[in-house]
Length: 162
Image (cartoon, rainbow, N blue to C red):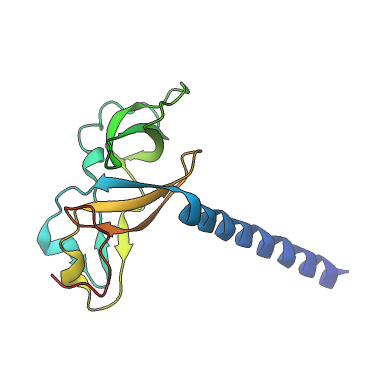
């Protein structure tokens, strides 16, 4: 009996994890591309190993306005799909050019996750020119970071050189 319970429990856990992966892959494949401007980061700590610590310009100036520990902000998109802070979400309908962006209010500041970007070893110089985080959004406010882009909104590819 214990063996059956173990097998069934394992299958349930496996199914839940795979469904989460499936959801992320659907956002990646079918989500709308949105660019979020990166905030300046101290260049001495910008690159640490094989990842880049990220801060977003949209986080600045919103620290005292957020009432909730976690919530959504409304991001307005310009014609180039660059997102700018519009307001904190209160359940109102969104305009066609608006998206929901999940935030965390911690240590007196707004944080957007993910706050780091992993890349292949030896590519630090290439990604040092990044000016935008490239996200894919679904209609429920779920988003994933799919890459970084330069100041011309061109996604940085590992085979490029600067």
